[in-house]
Image 1 (tube, rainbow, N blue to C red):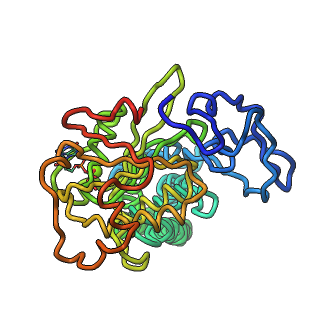
Image 2 (tube, rainbow, N blue to C red):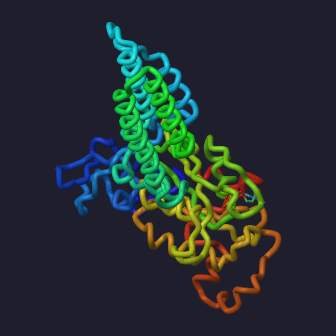
Length: 398
Ligand SMILES: Nc1nc2c(ncn2[C@@H]2O[C@H](COP(=O)(O)OP(=O)(O)OP(=O)(O)O)[C@@H](O)[C@H]2O)c(=O)[nH]1
Ligand SMILES: [Mg+2]
């Protein structure tokens, strides 16, 4: 097969280990983690798979919460449907006295309006998961795509709206029930309805925000933790998306500027009847975590929370805008940080490498350094040279 792991396993051999044999001890007993075959511990297997005696891992929660989010109705639709239903509510049968009948009708209609408005809101609040119960990857997606704290803030506003609707609805329904005449009951009903409509018109935006949040989250790529995943990582513009396009079913946008990829994209690939996920990620720049933008943080979230192998893409052609010395530093940092991940290096745009040697003014004395000089020439040890343009090296990567 194309490449060997440290312990002498070929790709095919490693992935042939039956999932049932892979257990990791936890505080609640041994747990099966088929995905951990992508971690370095598994690469040290010799001929027979062993039980891994490393420190107990935390329980892996399942992903997929975004696909189960409830459908949220636009606030105007909730309001108009509630108004229509409330107006159809008739008084309790058998009340002969007109004043009594009218105040009964008014109170019932207001109560119905209050419930029709509050019940959907309550169901959203119950069915949108608390962030703390989500898989850490999905938690990061929420923070990085919506903005820190926005999810909780919107849910809080929806809850505040629900509480207001209930209290104002009850208050006006009880006023209706105290009316002394048909006219008074009618007026109080009108006032109550107007008040609820006004509240919903003013604060219903929270419901519309929730609807947009649900839309955004539902559109996130679906990750299957049971399927081995390969994540393409590298500086911006090095050719990650181009590789995802040729290696998998994923069709991310490819452009000649940094940060074309602005989210996580999932493609699939089937090799020898085995399915794999291929993840495209936004590029990483050479800078500290405090300075990273949310796109870079998304990439780090994938690496931190999903059991992926890493295909690190190096562009030594000078085309991408990040110098080889900066790419080397990014590479070293990421490799050190995610050293438990299975790792493969590729040098992209090989069709350009034979032509124009690139001199970086900013690099100065860096060329003196041995490791750097070697990196600039050939990339890291064992890296495969690929070109999407002339299809060089692609079979070897696969
Ligand atoms: N000559 C040549 N150009 C390539 C090759 N692969 C990618 N490119 C070009 O490099 C540029 C960037 O490619 P992308 O695939 O968008 O790079 P990326 O790493 O996904 O970029 P970001 O999403 O911005 O981080 C595009 O103009 C591609 O056409 C290659 O093998 N040879
Ligand atoms: Mg891209």
